[in-house]
Length: 628
Image (cartoon, rainbow, N blue to C red; front, side, top):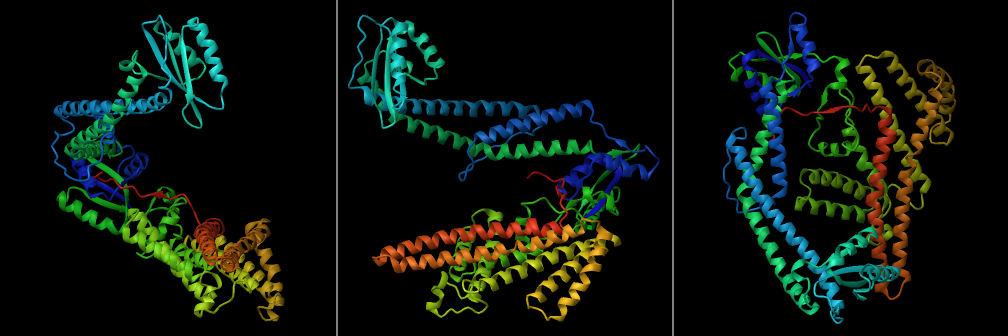
């Protein structure tokens, strides 16, 4: 990353911002930083903030309001897939645009209001249709009353006290002038139809509201009619409503085909103008010149400088400055990895970005994550299924760029699982023996201790690599004491591991005594350099290495579950039942074999490995660029 300043005549600032916006390379710096550097260019206080004048403030508010309204309008419209016949809109800052926008809003609001009303009517018709279908054999009779109000209620069957309460309270309110019908609607609900004189309708609604009883009030056009006729009308209306809603959807889609594109471009134009207006307030100026400060990727800085030189005929120039270590916290981070490694940046995105000037762990993720995954899954059959799934997802192009990155990671993990499956001689467990597969490296089930040793060996390499990366960072920054401390820690852990391996017989016996003699002075050196917590750090590091035993545990669990599945095929009769049970259990094992290794491999990186060297706190690179 390069720290850059763009300088030029004051009157060219709007044009320079427009040009930089189109280039989409420069990330603007904070105003305080820009003013600080500007003051060093001339006399102190010569550079000042560019304030937004009254007209600019009004324009900013107007553009904010226009952006909000355009966004809401686009959300309300369906996205057209084909048959686009676009119209045009005036410039977003013109008075004609506001009048056209208001007219479009009214049209869309009217269509959506009509659709919402139809949907509410459809839901109401469906609920009342179910209720009346149950109650229509019981016609209500309320003699001596001409104007009545009918209310429907659905009551849960496990709450019979509600019906008792309704009869008591409604009888009290209407002084007995009511008619109540109830019948089971389904296994969970009882339908209740209450008919009361219209003069008591409001008091009845108030009672139901107070007691939290939801009423399904009969629409006005059906009130006072016989239940059989109401049911007939509701059934007819229920058949009409889907067609009316579909017709409205077609109108909305037709409207969207005409206006979705222009509205989207208008939103982009409004947001771009708003961004340039706010960017101007982050710039500095002197009596005759302007200053724009920001960050540019180092490889693009020269091209941007040449483009500015050509576009403004030498009147606007770009100046690079050295980045001081004290500024690392505010420098944006751009990860640069080769094509095969870049997809693993997706795994790194689950944690904060690395701080500028620190180590990018993506290449190590690309190496160790598939290795750990394959060691845990370690089966040719399961690896082949993973490979097939990844290829299908990749061929279907599901998930866009993210899906492509995920399938690249999955392919690497699948190949690793297949390789380890060949080394362990496993194909859906011991079924590999039937096709001639034999363990090359070890038999995971019969050599559990060797498998554990392999897992811990890889864990030791991983942890020592993390400490080595911390040492390398200290050396790059010329921090001698920190580098010496990391060197002593690294040597101390190596000596401890050498003593342990010699003690267990994996290394020549003379190394045991030499490693033991080296431990004391190395421990003293660590305490001198890092304080009395150095021994605790050693214990924590050895504990981190032991955490890699989970590689063995999950791998062994997968083997045992596969063995159980294969035994089921032999035990159950008829054979079809046994094979079915085995396939189902293998499916469960495969699912667990995808989830468990993924989670544990990530955990080993994030918790044990990154803890040794990773410096979080990097800021994402967000260049000043057009929205479209």
